[in-house]
Image 1 (tube, rainbow, N blue to C red):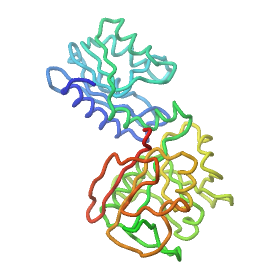
Image 2 (cartoon, rainbow, N blue to C red):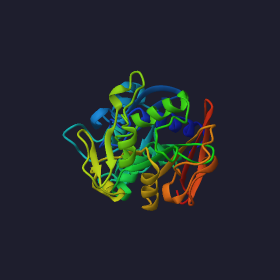
Image 3 (tube, rainbow, N blue to C red):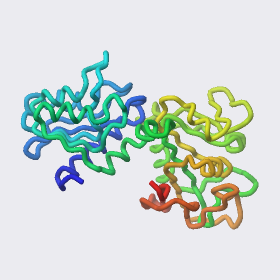
Image 4 (tube, one colour):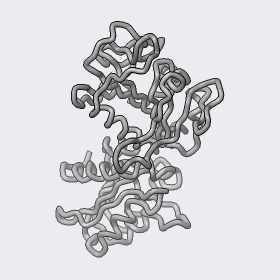
Length: 324
C-alpha cells in the first residue's frame, strides 16, 4: 500500500473516476490528480466516449506545474498508440513529473506493464500500488478484461422478514424516498438494467433515472425471459447471455426473486445490494426466489458484508462474494 498522503490522493482520484462511469465505455473510467508540494495542480477523468483520457486532461491542466509533481492515477497509463490521442505513458514520461503512483495495473495486453516501464525508462519514479478503491472504481473494466462479461450488481428491496412483495404479486413500495433516490443514482452508474419477465408484466417498470440533472443517464433496458422482449427492451434468454454483451462494463439487475435466483445460481453476481425496509409482510415472495428469503437483509450463502449504511428509515447492506 502507498503511504498515507499517497493513499489519500489515490482515494480522491478514484472518486473522480466515478464521474466518468458509465459514459467512458468502452474505455475504463479512470481518475487522475497531479499534486505538487501538497497542492492539486491538475485533475481529470475519462471523457464521455473514452477520450481524452484522465491523465491527458490532468497533465494539460497542470502545464508547467507538472514538473517535479506526482501524478496519482487509478489505472496504469496506456502504452498503445491511437488515432484519437497520444499514449498516456508517453505524456507522463515527457511532462517533467518526479513520480507516478498507479492504483492498479492495466490487464489490457497492449499496456500491461509496458506503460509503467516506459515511464520508468524516462527516469520517472513509478509505483504500482495495491489500492482497493482504485480497483473498485474500475470494477466494470477489470471484470470485462478478466472474465469477458460486465460487472453485475444485483439490487433487491426487502422487508424485515426477507420478502420483496406479497404473494399476490401486486406492486408494493417498501423503501422510503431517500433509498429510492439512491437506487436512481445506482441506475445512473450502469450501462444496462435488467428485470425478469414477471416483474415487467406485473409492475411495468420504467427503470429510468429520475434525479435532476441525471435524466440522460437512464440505462438500456433488458428483460430476462424466454418470450419476445417488448419494443424498446432487449432480451436475455439466460444469465449466461451477458457474455454476449460486447464492450458492456456494468449491468444492474433489479429483480424480482426468480431473476435474482437465476443470476445467483449461475455465479454471476459480483455485488449484492439489499435495501432493508422497516416493514414486515408476514409472507410473500422470497428475495432470492427458490433460494429463500433474506430475513434482516441477510445474504445467500457465499457472500460477506463489505458495507452498511442508513438511508433515512431504511438500511443498505452491500455484499460481495466471499472469494472477492
